[in-house]
Length: 128
Image (tube, rainbow, N blue to C red; front, side, top):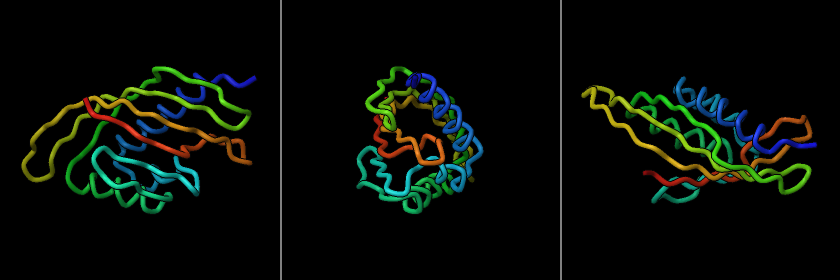
């Protein structure tokens, strides 16, 4: 039986690790080949390469740290889980050292791959 909350918890750990490492290559590996990421107020990014470029653009501006945890999860099908997570994020701007902290609520559609790995198929979030 699938434990949807455990799957979202594991993704939160992987997500936080990649973001805190400011590693767009590791971040890229969290996404399915046909993934779509929709940053707040921006156009959708399609596919892991475009998503990684968008993430790297953020890392080029500031150093990120992230701590995320699951809020809720729903088992949709044998290979699909829908999850909500909350992330506490801190950025330190390169050059100026300006510190900014914010919270984000993430919505993920996760899909199990033939390898058994769970990856992000769709991601949207809002900032608080």
